[in-house]
Length: 360
Image 1 (tube, rainbow, N blue to C red):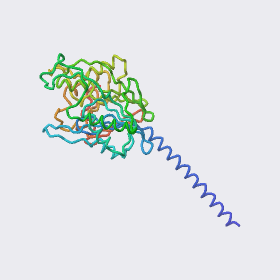
Image 2 (cartoon, one colour):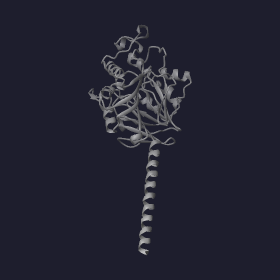
Image 3 (spheres, rainbow, N blue to C red):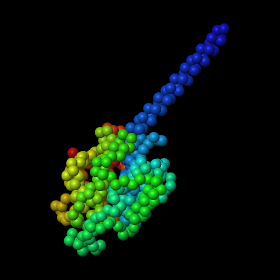
Image 4 (cartoon, rainbow, N blue to C red):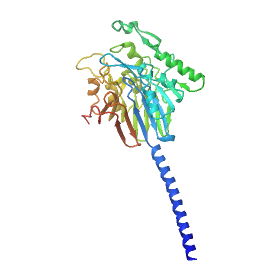
């Protein structure tokens, strides 16, 4: 009898322990899932001299993803050799095992921002819910293709076309997917929002401004940059500002509209180039106007290793002395993680920022 009682008690204790383990296991699993869902990661992908940004909310099967731009088809190095980068963004998605993007934003129609979309759109395993961008009939002021003959007096408002035909390819592939009801194309209005979990991205455009013609360098090229769609991403107390290749005129329009440009993390416009009117010692970077308003503590420059533009430029870096500056050319892919309060930065190559903050 005693043996039977002892046997019964052993079975009862074993059952209770297994039940407790099952409950604890479930709680632990749920806790991990909740913690994972509170993490926001922004991946600045090394795609050469161009932009490709992956935004990730959460992890595992419950993760949500969006993208801003998809990088170039190629970029040119200082030795004048072209580097094929057409597959870098797609390969990064593949490496991360991402097959579903809630959205893709194409900030403006230059090949160094949209070229990588060709490979992504061609991949049947990648589903995109919504693609945001400028109107396909975007009209911009354009002058002579000869840089020396470019002037405001000869500039005419025409439908944008790129000489290489990359934008036309991207448009055709998007329209094909829209026709098949595989995606939706939206021209965002200023103030529109899109969410990834509890992270909110607000569109500061498309701005329907009639930008004056003019800017140092290839004026035709810079004119299109002015139509970059700027966005601000917030997750609890953390904030990011994404700028495409926005020029001073773009930012002036946003300030005029009263948009909040302050952010802890800034994606520096136009790959760290100066975009100045006159290249003199006293000249300021065209982006100083933006830097003064954002007041970022972390700045990210997306450019290629030994790029032909020799970016980031000195004047731009001088005006970012209050921020730790990371550039993909020297650090590879840069991942910034937010838990809603704190930010941490992980780089693929090297250690720490490319250029350390020298001013408070």
